[in-house]
Length: 186
Image (cartoon, rainbow, N blue to C red; front, side, top):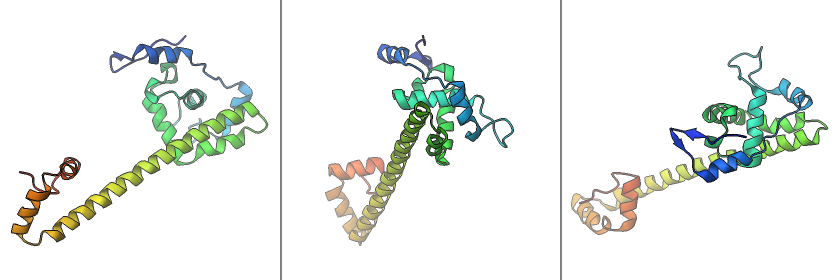
């Protein structure tokens, strides 16, 4: 049974600990591992950094993808959650997760596990792309707003008058909070 995790010297709430205790960690059989091992990064003999335990990492990914475990609640038996997360991201960037279901061959259980990880990876990629799109949209909107305000306020007197009218609006106050220096506030 997995004990309650302690992160940053604080114990997570009882519900999170109970949920972790209920996880049934899927272990790879030796035959399944033999199919996966040759295609994974960080093996002995590969150039660059070596993964301490690829098998344990794959089992951690199975747990995360199948049980919807939050990264920070990854049981300590899998190592540091932040290390596992960074490794997941690196493998995701080179689309390794999408290749693994093909390696499973005729092993339907292994194929299902690898497909679930590939789906989890794709969902992660979509979230990252959406976040980047939103950030870009906010930046473009802010730049357009600044350009509009600069074009409307042709003289210092007009600028001061515009500031008095607009600065009191809740929308401009929100914009100033997140993008300082749009309009001077009084």
